[in-house]
Amino acid sequence: MTNDDIPIGRRVARWRVRRSMTQQMLADRLRRSKSWVDKVERGVRALDRYSVIQELAHVLRVDPEVLLGQQRPTPAGPPDGVDDIRAALARYDTPQAPEQTEELRRQVGHAWLTYQHAHYGQLVRILPGLLDTAQAARSPELLVQTYRITSSLLVKLGEADLGWLAADRAMSAAGDDPILAATAAISVAQALRASHRDHLALTATLTAANRITPTPARPCDHEIDGPVGDQTDRQPHDRRSGSGSGSRSAGEWAVGGTLLVQAALAAAGCGEHRRADELTDRAAGIAARLRGYDDQHRTSFGPIAVELAWVLVATQRGDAVDALQRHSTVVRRKAWQRLPAEYRGAYLVDAARAYLQVGDVRGAARALVDADSVAPAEVRCRPLARTVIADVARAQPAPAGVARLATLVGLTR
Image (cartoon, rainbow, N blue to C red; front, side):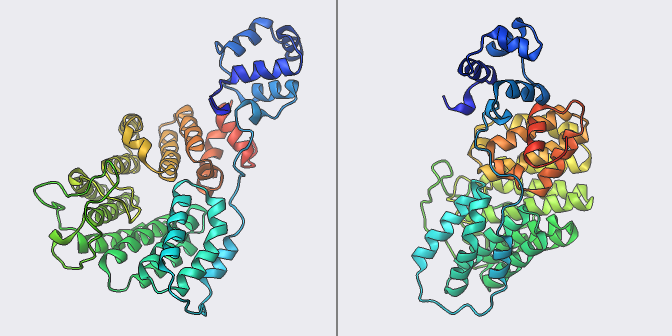
């Protein structure tokens, strides 16, 4: 059992023993009864107020985070290094380097994994060098991927306009390749939506989606090949650019489905709720027929992604109660656990906003605490998450978990 798995009452008991205190001694210093201490240590009485946890920590001479199982918290606030990324994007005189495609591919793959695990501080340090290397290489595919990673990270860190620049660079690097252009359009849409330019995001995603998916999306009368379950592909990536839908691989259909999801979210942001529902249905049609793919385009697309999008669209429409009922069902599925930590953490922050919409402060707190356990940097580094934490922390008394997060990110409780 890891330290994070130990109930807080057992941590209290361990530190009490280390400080050579009896239960009565601890109770006296807290001005509480011995029975209260005993119930806390046995887990019969919940410690759900941060002020009480702080009081216990003070008497036991430890940090509150130690009692909460957070001895090594992820540093709060956006990581330093965005200026280095900006400088790398501003370099236009990068000399052409000898082609080392396999090494660059390895570095790009590592950067993707770093992003999907929500290790944003590490990624900020990696990206300037990776951008220099990718910009000097001769691989449009890897350059597009590098710009996409850069754009996604910058959007997370509240640099949406700079993220849009990186996404636009990805679009330019894609050239005439329709699939690379479609993947770049995903990043363009995310940056535009983060900049509250939903109408532009809707146009960009629909244009790209309609190039590679028919309307309505009916890929074929049978499932699209590709074994998702074991995350392997039976056939190599098909880069054919023919207009017929039959030339598309499962991974390419997933790109189209992801564009439709982004379009649905943009439509919801514009207040075009009927259109958002139609686009979500189109995405669901693709997801239902995908039998598997290796996700080399890093979309995380599938039925679970469409259901999560439906929750967010419904919330935008004002149907937060129905949305949260579905949310509670979706996050209990096995497919939810298979999504990248970044994806789950970002969604849970959005779910916290939905709980606030219906006035459920404790539900919002649970979502934020869950997001922090899944992807700490998603909560502690993003300005958007900071805003949600502040909204929840205004409740009196503030839920213990969110009060702790508010302290970590430097908010006044």
